[in-house]
Amino acid sequence: MTPYGKEQLFSLIHRQFPRWPSTFSKCWNESCQEQARGGHECPKCLEKKLETISDKKTAQKYMKIVLEMREIEVNLLSQPENNNET
Image 1 (tube, rainbow, N blue to C red):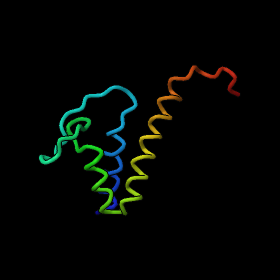
Image 2 (cartoon, helix red, strand yellow):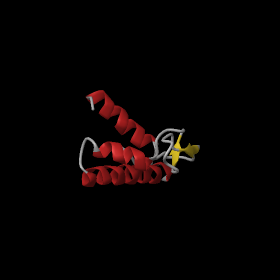
Image 3 (cartoon, one colour):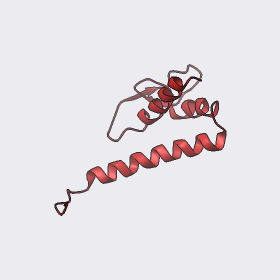
Image 4 (tube, rainbow, N blue to C red):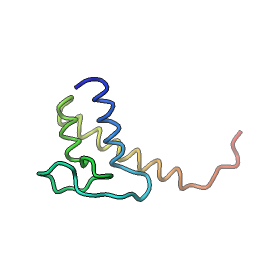
């Protein structure tokens, strides 16, 4: 996979974990019955693609970290503003 292809893969993975409510539909892979954001590939199919450039453990870790990052972002965005900034 080219460096550009890897960047696209990372972007698609991040897209599958939106911060806010979003529309989901069937994964575009015909044999898959999972849900995917925007009619693209689902997280499971994207994780399999990620395994082609890494190993299974790294791919699982990456997916988990992206999901955790989104959860942290949502928590931070929902906190009241800090008026004590300097």
